[in-house]
Length: 297
Image (cartoon, rainbow, N blue to C red; front, side):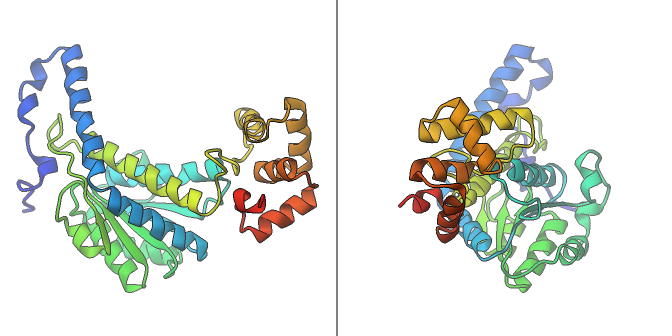
């Protein structure tokens, strides 16, 4: 039998022993108080997160991918971060990948036993064409999920940089990875429900890694999403707003230049700020590796 008693994520929170007797206000209040501990816990692991951002940036520059692996809540958070990258940063859906124990159907419905498999993740990584340029980030609040442990083990054997994100210090997945990020968020308000503080911590860390690495490969100018895809009406307007903010142009000019740039905000910004046509802007960006700030020098 698995011994979970030593995991802080599975221990009882002494401040919520009467959770079933609390009023709605008291429940909201205690959960808010507990959530404050998440930010403090993450502050303790900023150096490790910074290393993960650096490694992820290096992988992307080398033609590799960011691959998240996880089960349950952790796997869903990896998938969520992965699917949000294409519309935000204009990257292909293959650049940031989320693998969850039990497959994509496990995003909406638990697949029993999948997280305990010692071979499933390796099979899925092989199917995904894992290469040594990829960075593999294993997610497990408990830090002991076999699916993640053996996935990291295989990725390591392939020469990949590997990162473990867990909410227990000295975790099994942390021991398997080249880098361990282990914010200790403490016992949950609802005992063992790691979709709460532990899930919040993992989401925050993934936000940092994906956003930081996209900044690193030139997907951002100043603090603007200059590679955003105009996939819906809201994003069309946002693209115009980004161009207006970055250059000070009018709405009419933003529409015109974006049309000339085939909707590519980064090209449009370079055109206006450099006073050049679309072909020259594309050339400048190409020579600068897609970095607008460098293209403007």
